[in-house]
Every structure is written in structure tokens, then in C-alpha cells.
Amino acid sequence: MSTVSELLSQAVAQLKQNESQADDANADAGLLLGHVLQKSSAWLMTWPTKDVSDFDAKTFLKLVSKRQSGTPLAYLLGEWGFMDFMLKVGPGVLVPRPETELLVELAADRIPQAANWNILDLGTGSGAIATALARLRPNSQLHAVERSQHAADIAQSNFDSLAPSVKLHLGSWFEPLLQQDGPNNQFEIIVSNPPYIAEYELELEYLTEEPQEALVAAEDGLADIAHIVENSRPHLKESGWLLIEHGYGQGDAAQKLLTDAGFKDVETVLDLNSLPRVTLGRWIA
Image (tube, rainbow, N blue to C red; front, side, top):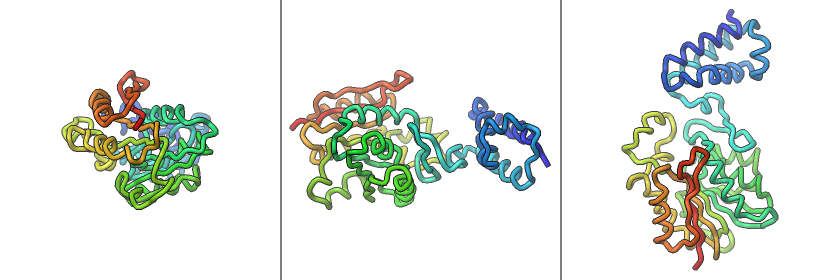
């Protein structure tokens, strides 16, 4: 039987064999052991000599091996933090990134606290953006679109527990909305974190475990962004906003797409790393 400290030491040494995980080895090992034992990091630090059952030790080391081989930590834990809440995640949905919190904040800034607005999240994935906006602006009605049934199931589970008012639509981009008339077809705010990585980008080498259809887009990564811009106008109310997350090298191209489509007040906002991350514009007919 091994102790907490012995297992953590073994796991850290194993994880550091993968250079891309070396910096996070200690944190990852602690999170995985805490997950298996259902204990906090403080407990692990307080009780390093506690014995761990052979069953739990075996379960833990299996997770460590999966992490070493590249499985995202979030998939192994089954949940991941975004904004101020925890989301269920798993294979088939992207792991929510801190950069996407900027998209949420920019959208929320444009929605009056008491407003009863229609808001649309395109390609919701795990439901992170729609959930966050529903919690920040509870008087508004959130709609989320997702084309993957598996991802939609995960999103619906998150909505059920965190934001029950969100309405989920299954389909590709605006297609599910074309079957609807009336107020559910037009929005004051449309947000999206679409696929924007080009097929030749080197970063894909480190993202093999996450769904490629949620990452990769044609036309140098701009195909889905262009589709959303071109098809958003009939679904935006007068003076409605479109906000799109994109790659750090796509700010100028995203601005041109919105400007050429007739959007006003177009700008690109930098993330916490001072990289172009979100481009937005207002539709004024």
C-alpha cells in the first residue's frame, strides 16, 4: 500500500517525462489524486503519510498514464472551471479556455442588467458561454445552437444544473432558427467561439484529443467566421451586436469581414496576453 506523498512523487516523475506537461506536473498530479480520493488539495498537503488503498492507487495511476499520453486534464476530471462555476466536460467538447471569458465579458457589458433580451450562442459546445451569460443576465433569454448531438447532450446537462432557462437548438449555425418565426429568430446579441484554426497550424499537434471539427476551419481558419458574419444579419435586431472569438492572427481579417458586410463600430479587443482575441460589430440597417 502506498502513501499520498509516494503516489504524488511517482506521478510527478511520470508526468515530467512529457516535456509539454513538466511545468504542470505537480498541480496535475494533485488534482488527479484529489479527484480519485474525493479530497481537497489542502487535505493532501495535510496528510501526506496517509495510506491509499490499492484500488484507488491503481485508478489514480491509470489516470496519470492517460494524462501523460496527452488526454486533457479536464476530460479526466470530468469537469472544468469557467468564470465562477464548474462545467461538466468530456471527449467531444472543447475544454473551456480563459480567453473565452473575454467574449462573455464583452457581451455582458452590452446587455443592460434588467434587459429582457434575446441572446444567441452559436456552436455552444459544453455550453460555457450561454451558461455564463444566462447567469450574468438572468432577465434575458439565452438560446444555444450546437450541431453535435454528443456535445449538445453535455451542454444540456450543464444547462439543467447551472442555467435551466437556456434553450438548446440542435443543428448547424443558423439552420435550426430558420424553422422558427417570431421573437426566437432575432437577437440583440449573437456570440460565437467557432472553429478558427487552419489545417496547417502547428498547435493542432497538441490538441489531438479534442474534437477537430470544433477547432479546424477551412480558408486559413476563417471559413466559419465568414459564414457567421454573412448569415447573422437577418437574425440581428436593429443595433444588435455580433461578437466572435478568433485566433490571435485573425483580428484584421475578422474586422474586414464585418466591415465589408456592413457592420458599424467594428473593433478588435485584446486578451490578457495583449493578443487580438475578439472582434465585434453592430448591425445598423
